[in-house]
Length: 151
Image 1: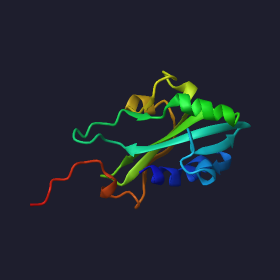
Image 2 (image 1 turned 135 degrees about the horizontal axis):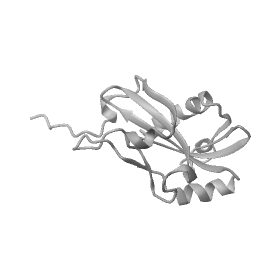
Image 3 (image 1 turned 60 degrees about the vertical axis):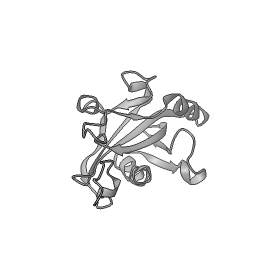
């Protein structure tokens, strides 16, 4: 799921007006704290990408938060003299669609929390980069739903 989110990220960022997008994982695999550096409106952003299933395993309830570890993101953003930011991607394997949201760590209601809140109310306040975009790469195998064993 994470690889798929990082694959979508450059196009999502370009469409949102970001330029000079650098894939940090191309420089160092599993780059600490973040995945992309990108510029917009004269500002440099250090962006961590988190793609997760929209719904929680077993209950089917909305996955209410995506862990980003803001302390680590801030530390690495400082090394690049960039603004610590996040790109969260909700993946719905039932509809084969995803939605994507962008924001800075400091803009979160609790900028020291470990997770980006992903409730309907919270996401309504974020910059939406994509809403319910279909992608054939989203398959049931990406689902975190339990499957009954075949007897």
